[in-house]
Image (cartoon, rainbow, N blue to C red; front, side, top):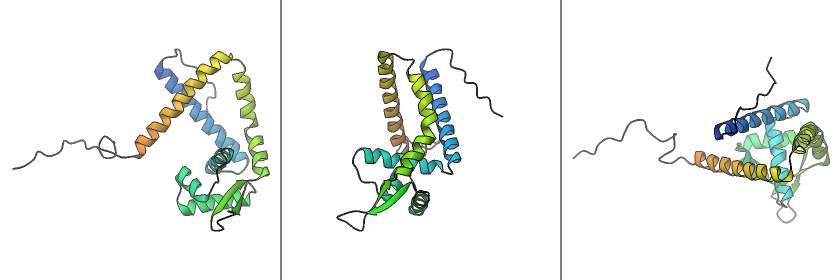
Length: 180
């Protein structure tokens, strides 16, 4: 049994804020796992639908290659993912109008309906929490969260590009001295 009682930090210092962000991420992941399990969906399925929604909202075409790249999946894993979403009625495959070789992915009305139902409790609770803040406070929080997302993206990019200072390539021993 787990203790679901959240204890806020005693102060609002940088380390406490980082711990709060970590706690929020953990709880958001737990919610996604729980909501997905109730609907026989994997976290990767939910992430794929989020990618498709984000790209579609920008008016962009979503292909299996985009999912593969954004979710860091192999081609076979991407095919299995799309097959699951297709069989569950959440995604349809369509051929591109001008290039029939290209497959596009589109969310179905069922995906929007199921997603809304899955995330309605989270939305309701978050909406109630947000309502307790003034527009000025929400402005500060929005700036803060935007900066945290940007910082996380920068850290991910840095971590994925091994270089001389990367822990993956840094050696614990100094390089050997040149010999004459």
